[in-house]
Length: 240
Image 1 (cartoon, rainbow, N blue to C red):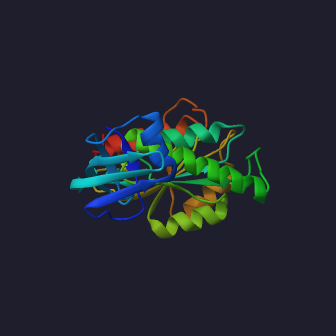
Image 2: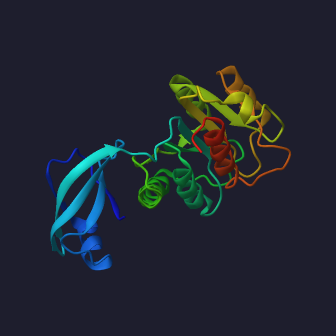
């Protein structure tokens, strides 16, 4: 069923305008009487029926609501070492599909890509749009937010204030089954760019409360690692 995000708690009748309205009318060619889902972006789904259709204005009658079943019980934020080229596009998309609540692009010692402030701002806008589309496609109850580009040390301190941290290191560490379980509720995971983390970065993270994790004996690409980590965490915490 088509799904659309709104930034407020709806009343009995909702008016959808702008790009979403045009998409409903022109691309989906939906008609009065058809059903769709509205989500308030904070985890509640509203089942609705279209009452009228115009190119730029769709009127929807809200029938009932329920908590989104797609949101996992563990909140995982991905702190991703900024990769080269357009790899971040895929990382954002697949991380949202797999269940992250947020993505923080991080500049680490081995990052080759180091965009200036203006370029970084444009990239964040693009990645946020990708996150929104992925949230719609995968039936999420929220739109995970892509944060501004952040320095590694600042990112570690930020994550340490929120909860537990796992930094995944190709040099070895503990398995996810030992670091996450059904009691885990808030978790930050750090993934290195091409080339991984320097030992000094690992040491700094550990000094700030991080656990060092491993994704096995195989070396994964930077765009593969966050998806593997998220999938394993969702399984370990009973969310898959």
